[in-house]
Image 1 (cartoon, rainbow, N blue to C red):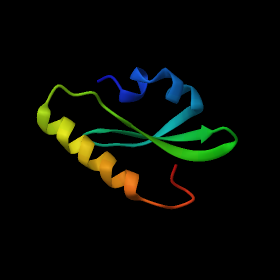
Image 2: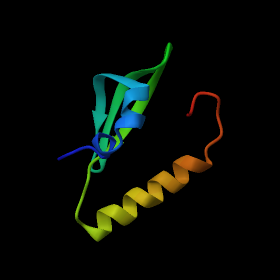
Image 3: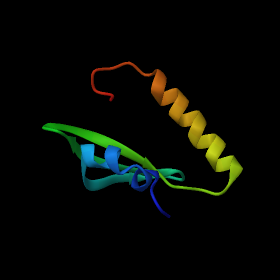
Image 4: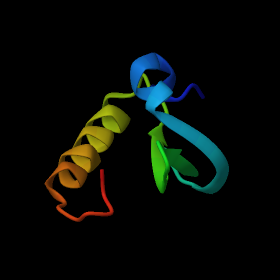
Length: 72
C-alpha cells in the first residue's frame, strides 16, 4: 500500500525516516529525525474504503488534541 506521506512531498522532506518500529492496520510508525531531533513518525496507508478513511480521520482527530512537547 502507498503511504499518505508520499502524497505530501513538502511534509515528507521535513522528516528523515529510519527503521520501522511497528506496523498496524492503518499505517506504520518509523524511527525518524525532524531536523536534529529524534522522533517517531506515523504514516497512514491510502485506502479506498470509506470505513478505513473514517477510522484514519478519527485517529488523526484524536492525535491533534494531544499536547506534549514530544508530540509534533
